[in-house]
Image 1: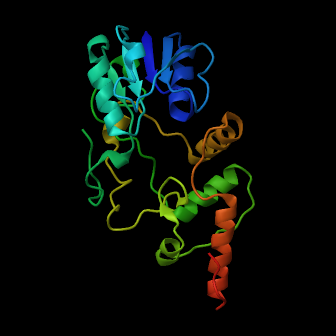
Image 2: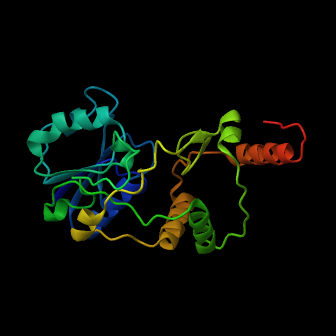
Image 3: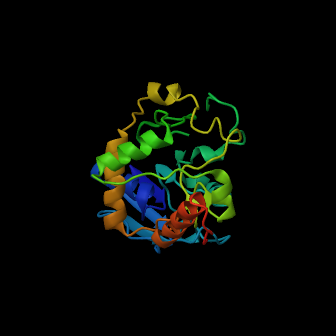
Length: 246
């Protein structure tokens, strides 16, 4: 199968490209090429999806399937418009951030990741089992052999120290306020499970993600070590009645 990965130089896109090549497919990765290199056996074409004509290097080429892992809606729309005539199957992998309503719990989706080979179509949510934040962090720490303690701080402190939600610079992962995100990870995953999608263990995911972070050299955003240290110092100082230093 002639497979086009829009991306393919880091994290999910790179993993899909490597897996597809190992299965014997002809893999092309189209990206800017600034985040990393494509896996062994894949062909690289330089594109810039932020430019209106940034996909011009792919003009006239045909593919059996495309896998798109972009998180920018404009990039996805331009890609579909530019490539749809030469593609038989399109898989778009997003996150649950794609939904307009994150308040309602137990919702059911009606885009299947990793499904181009079998021509599977439809809408599928891939969400792991629910757990508390403490359980998740403790299991991750145990999986990677880390010895650590956890400090629980409140929302007001985080916001007053410009610690942001979810992802990006100065962010704290997994911090989403209720009730606006009560339904974020509670969506019905039975269609995905019924179609054969399985969930790896959290421990395995933690170990593989740490290995990727250490070897791939990809960008990891969030609080830096210095920012985290300063925030913890300020929090502990405030608990003891001393003046906080941000």
